Length: 128
Image (cartoon, rainbow, N blue to C red; front, side):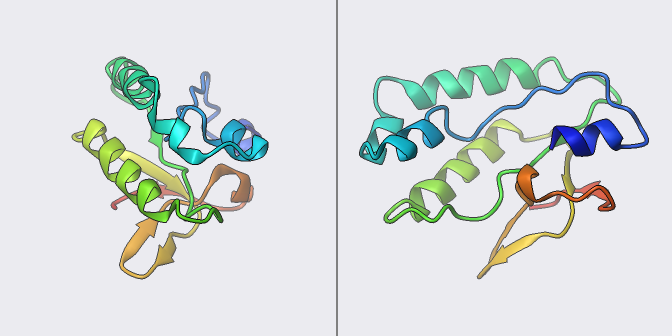
């Protein structure tokens, strides 16, 4: 993701990365039950950070969606979909961008994950 933005002709001056889930990678990597993601106020804390960061968006800034399709985790698909819907509510009124093709899964459309971006791909508006 950062490589793509560094090489992009518009030369972004600052990048802030926000995740759908604050603990997702570390929880899955350690094999801990994924319900811990939703405990201890983790989602609430993550939402506060997303909202406060989005509040600083100024004219000309770009908010790029890059969460990708469903993770390959048993029993997590609906949690993931619900979380995307929740975050989209937090981003309501914000123009979103994406890089590359849309990932489709049934009737759901996802922006490509940043790890899957290629230098030659165009940045376009993301309309969920």
